[in-house]
Image 1 (cartoon, rainbow, N blue to C red):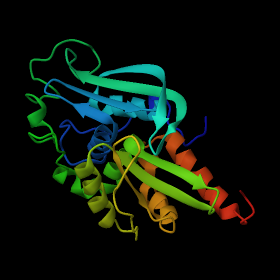
Image 2: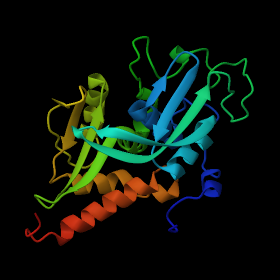
Image 3: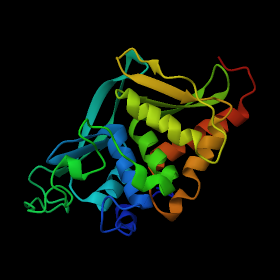
Length: 246
């Protein structure tokens, strides 16, 4: 394990506000993950990640119970391709109290009475106004929840894309990226073969956008080490590309 990769003990030292909806880097990262790969109901939150360290961080922020499994699923862009990977599921509420003890909590889900007390409106749309000052952490959580990072051997470039079933959520992500301090043009939303939607940051802008997204993330611990390593490896491959790869 590298020095940059947080251990479980490191994750427990992450600064967490008492209010799960307060404007804070940790809550922005958590809700980005929930929006990207989670589900919010009236009495529970469930969020899924493939990175164990990130799963521990999310549990430190919001409590709940973690379960580990291995899953095989279709690749989002091409359902003829499957991949097998670790899957960590964090469950909050639905009989738990949000602190991992598994006991009931009269205060409700994360101290709120149902999903409407969370940053989700009556139609299930997310409201991220409270996290406007933490757009980097919010986008980082969202990318780790429903994004992909890859090296494109055909062009020697790095690809960063977002895939989700909710078109409006992806449009919100596009708005956040458009407002970030680095120039990051994007493609239009397109349908995937699995029935969802996706868009990608332009290849020329992906290195600067990716570097900004993970800049100084060790200071807070709010990141998935495996995803950052994937970005670093992809950038190294792009830098070494000489046009001869097939």
